[in-house]
Image: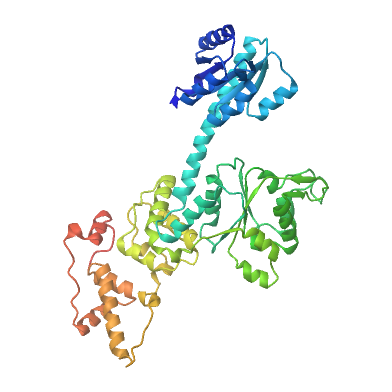
Length: 488
């Protein structure tokens, strides 16, 4: 299909040559590119080859009906607008034309000014639709690629599920600890859905008092309660044709759970204080950090609602399950925050990153993002050093031993020898990470520098020699940040 600036390209379909010529001459004078076709079959051939912004078609033609042509055009080129022209118009004909995708309906004999206004409006609408689609794809790309940062298997699995289920209207339940990014997943699902053109409407079920949450979800009528001076739409109505995101759905009271179940089943509800049933077309995505199965057993959550919500579950992993993504996440946050705040913090030293990798991150990605923001604000420029990190990071005592399975041989072990060997391994690892800088290695091990020196002497260990300065990442960090601690 050829693209000839569809914003200005028009196809006129009419069996009368005089009408085709007259319309072509008038439209070309207005700066439009105009092609013509003498009937439906010729028109279909042309739209196969050229992307038209607008097709003007007659209804009664020897080669077929222009009304039958409308759905065929929309099938071949769905983004093209269609205006139907006829000298035998009726209400039924206009209804059929618009139902099949025509934008406007003009009766003959037509006034040329009326035609020009209709053409202008149709092409402007075509441009706005195309622009909206471009922006929508950009937003999709943003939420699918930029926001869900990471290359680890758990994050790739979440991405795979988003792509797989985004276009379904089934209810989705996002499970994960607080701070893992459940709302980002919900937004990605919404923006990846090509059929949902309405808004993304979030509501935190745990942050709104119970006596207000019903009105927030379903709206209320005037006078429904004290202070209800006017009728108000709820979140379900606001999310019509779009997505309603129910965050922390596990915090809903049992009475509201009943009402939510009805909406999910019937897509209908009444406002608080109202009797009129309101029907909505809403896709519901729910999220929780609670164990809903346990809540069902404890009779704190309705079993029927649980199964209605848990049609397609997506589990967002905690940060400790994909620690290898921490460097990417940190750089992502640094890039954004530097741009927002006008700071110049390019990264972390190797030792600082190692300390972040050893921390368990109970607050997950949100905790990491907040930490990076704090560091950027306080540092403003230069690499982040260990001394810039908060105490909770520096005091992390976890070692690789915590993740290793301990196996006892049949003959047993020599505990002092094993502990001495493991201590030596930890010292070697710390010295390796710090390129032989004993003060920093002692900091990693939670020792005084003099204590580490004594242990090295006792074990007969010689610390590794520091590499040449040009290849030494710690030395490079120090050159880039001269204010850092001098190497002992």
